Length: 362
Image (tube, rainbow, N blue to C red):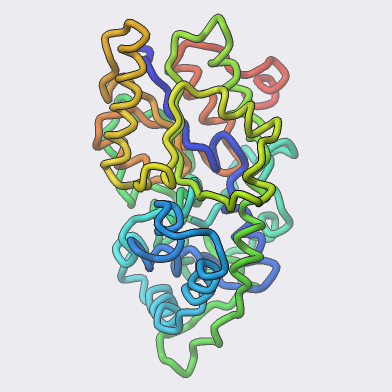
């Protein structure tokens, strides 16, 4: 049955994932894969990133001081290496599944359908070098479906599929990838063998993440616009996004053509920094359902229940909680968002790809 409402994450779904910037920063600075994701997620639920997304603190010098301290935490650095070496605990078990921001490693995995040049945010030299595999499992492999911010390890699954006929996924259901051998790879947990903690410019990293996520996804965003068009407007379109509030005088707070156009596609928009909740807190999903239900009834409809909603996100844990709430879910893979669009076409019965794109992907 076609859904009444379609609920979209923003970062990593409608726009390019900011977590591509983490991958790029790791590769450029020889930082072990997923260290930054580990440090941020391990500080949940009250780390600086999580508090920023709930709107509890401002995006200012104090935030960046705390964020840098989080990324330079010696105890977490030792724990990261110990966990990496032993493989006895998955990152999900260690880190309480949380997410960074609509957005954990976001590398596209090597499969028989590689990203095209049009798959923004998924292409970099670092990804091509990832084909040389280390024999030791990466932290990403240990992490499976965890997340930082909606943005953790977000290495894509081998397929993207609708959950309408499946049980809620678990952390062990996702695929894994090995870390690049050029990066620091621990061999045991002895303090004498743990390398020095790398210096990370958290402020530079943050703004790189924000910058890269201001470009529309080349497949999901056109699909969103098609769903909004007059002949398919029977769907209620909502956004459920972990977000940050920029300072009033910052350029990202100013109206611009794309951001205004993006917001105009949605009937309901729920921003974590506005409501004081963030994914994967079950309460924010209930709030989303409430807002969708209210909107439908205001338009003369009979209301919206969880089973009437299809939710798209790039984070496994966000999707798991949505499934538990009763929603149907579609996972959006970094660099392969067109796969999610194909599934969305089946769910809605609406053609959402142009012929050129369809020919290149089928």
